[in-house]
Length: 208
Image (tube, rainbow, N blue to C red; front, side, top):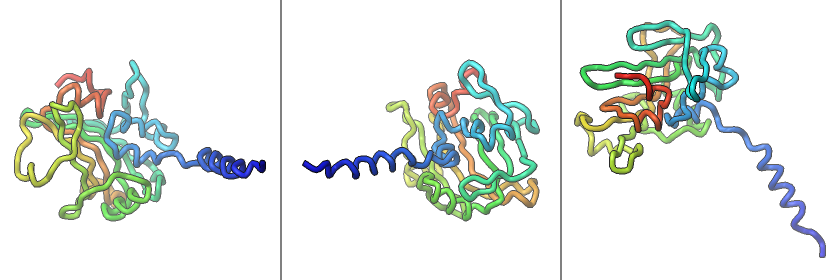
């Protein structure tokens, strides 16, 4: 019998072997426990100094403030059609609410960033007033992040849980003209250890 199936199988395995690796930016946008690992990618690791201690990433250097750290790049980093101009990480307490955020500044506008992120396989985002977001809320019953229903939470303050949001928005005005947009992950609310383990395990040991 002719081995008529041999060529299709070889073709299939060849196709699988050359499949493109996931985009580091799309992986970052998951805002999960692997999100911060983007700073260890080849194009970023020398611009945002970091080390691994007890299995967790520890950031160093940058310009420090009361809220956190900021690293501005001398030259934009080109990834997935986006020109990244800097990175930041913040962790602060505001009137009993813990706010943790980390992300990138970019040359592109929010609309342009959204277009490029879609091409890179990023998450589906909702648009409102020029901002793009994917919001999740922590379910104590399921011990996991669940999609947030805007209709159910609009105008309500989350007091017994926390929100995790991936957001594309304009860059801060105090940055140079070379930064027009930014995309960030954030956790805010009554943050507990389980939430940190699922998104920022490096902060589990940081008291607040």
